[in-house]
Image 1 (cartoon, rainbow, N blue to C red):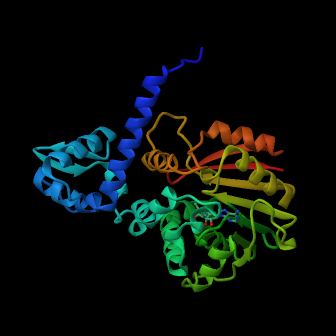
Image 2: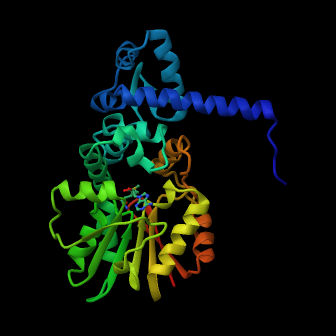
Image 3: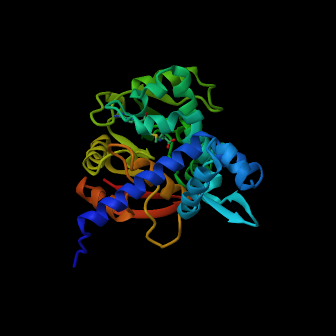
Length: 319
Ligand SMILES: C[S@@+](CC[C@H](N)C(=O)[O-])C[C@H]1O[C@@H](n2cnc3c(N)ncnc32)[C@H](O)[C@@H]1O
């Protein structure tokens, strides 16, 4: 039976979550997690880092402790694992911080996605964003490149390929393959200004993954969707998977790399954090693997396989 929460409790829970988010975002912008990565801090030092009077800082720190971002031991505050990934020293933190830009982008969502936000209005800022996504993709892309064999003459299309870490690694490992990266025009333009990857040779196509018009994408052997579904609504996820299905030749494979709410009961801190941030956006969410499986079937795929990829999940299915 579905348990219905009384409206007052529901509202107070939502208010609590919103307040928690405000505190987390304040601590994040003021560099608390970066500072605690260097060394644990006394309450007075932590208050100075937060630029709050000591009593208010105490309340904020209590909330961060309850959220599991900070822990208290021997009268000092230190980062937990979650706090560490909020520090720019960690690739996930770099992605999330980007000098506060990404968070602002998530807090001011626009029709055009992150690149429509004021915070990412310049090519330099977009390069920074793409570069940080590349840092996050180092480990999973290296692992995917070892798993995925793309034969001579076969083509892989990377929809929403970002800074190109996945296409670059895949091409290095499969140098006879054709690899095409599809991005929004702003990102495709910024990619030209970024230092070229080792292998070069990746073709960049400025197109929309909801309705790609480029004939160069049709009849492909693989379509990669890395970290795409978590930024879209369930309806859009199905639409994108249908696009992938249309772009593939019969027998072709879709490859989905993403964070999913972990069915195994193990904590996935980056997924939890991402879910928290996506809570503030209009569309995104960290979905469950089961939802993704259902959408894959709805889009016409079968033969689902799952692999772990350095903290991410990789789902492959066949047209
Ligand atoms: C979270 S990033 C993932 C980038 C890359 N796949 C990775 O894993 O590093 C999502 C990417 O999708 C791109 N994107 C969003 N909407 C798009 C659309 N309608 N068409 C093409 N690309 C889009 C964004 O520009 C962004 O670079």
